[in-house]
Length: 174
Image (cartoon, rainbow, N blue to C red; front, side, top):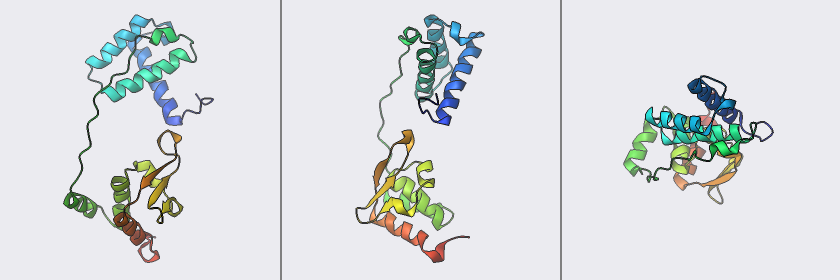
């Protein structure tokens, strides 16, 4: 897994998936059959596992059976579960204002504003620095986000002002 540059979180998740499958089987998973895999998938569905979790489980098992065991044929009948994408709820201006005001201080308002306003994940917000903000082009550079990908996010003028207010030396918390 390290050779394929999978993140430590992905490695841990894949190992957990194989461990859970072994627990279901009551034996080593390398002796599993395609029917065992199908029964396990049905078991997970009956337990009420979400489609996202179910798909992550299938991906972990696929890696296990295709890479170290070299038995990709066992995974042929295992299919990802697809659910229709729902459009996100967009908050009104008043709701966004109330949300930001409910944050503890300017630092938290800025973090929450960047997360909601630019669509960044929490980990991406945590790793932002002043050099990632391009106020001329009004974009935020996100380096090594999810999937180790770099990307740009739009920066609104209101959000830029909020960030500038937080980054002013007088507002820094020590």
